Length: 352
Ligand SMILES: [Zn+2]
Ligand SMILES: [Zn+2]
Image 1 (cartoon, rainbow, N blue to C red):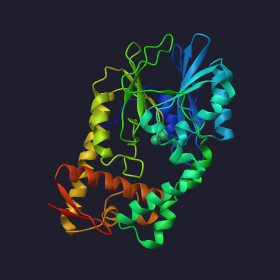
Image 2 (cartoon, rainbow, N blue to C red; image 1 turned 180 degrees about the vertical axis):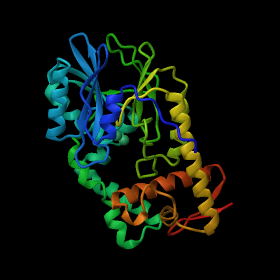
Image 3 (cartoon, helix red, strand yellow; image 1 turned 90 degrees about the vertical axis):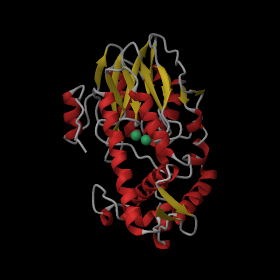
Image 4 (tube, rainbow, N blue to C red; image 1 turned 60 degrees about the horizontal axis):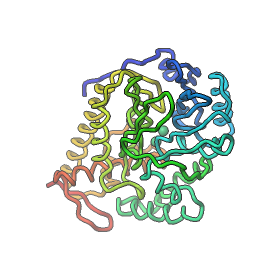
């Protein structure tokens, strides 16, 4: 694949990311601030919360994890911009993942702000974060992994692999449901929602045509590609959704991309092409491996793919993601008639 490297919009921010540091709170342009909010024990290190100035307050895009450290960093960042937590009028959440949505409830509690989310993610809140519902979600994950051929011994460990991060979320029902194309109606901002399902079913980006910026959440990032996986709360073919969502943002006429992780950058269209090429390569690799085995379970296929490190050294949580991501690619290939699934225990994948 041709290596494409985006141009960072601010070299200091890129250097901070590359150097393992937390970047500065900065004024991106008049009326718009970027506040890095730390994520503990996670290679992403921080989520970039954007602060949009309004008459008499601010709106924020994403919130961070629900930890004291994250909350304090958000409060401190707002202070640099000249605001208090009580000035927050609204929280635009790009998607339901804990690093974006986790702190939203606490911000609302302190400020009375509204929380906005896409309905497809709002529907998942209870199952994902309510103690009464969580067992059934773990059970569905277990069944999915079993059908993938995950060995019995690792099944329990993998099925509950994300339970440890649940405490970093306040279960907060959204006050506003935002659909594709909705204008947010923030005074001084021509902000419009773009529904970009794939990484999560209700992922939203927000575009300002006048300022020519895209708040891209986890949908498009400078270097990493977001996880797109089949899981109990995904649709049947999330990779198709994701690739369609990439095509949708590629058309936008923006100058700068403001993502939730790493650093902000230019060249949206080129980066989108690059991410699409990455998935094309991945699809080709998986099709090749399926072709070489003549009937293999998803888990066995996943162990044979190229990952950023040797399979044996990948921790359980990441192995589950790798398996579910492999399944997303298989489902995409199946929908295109490029591989065949024979349902069973486990499901087996065959070349056509
Ligand atoms: Zn995410
Ligand atoms: Zn994220």
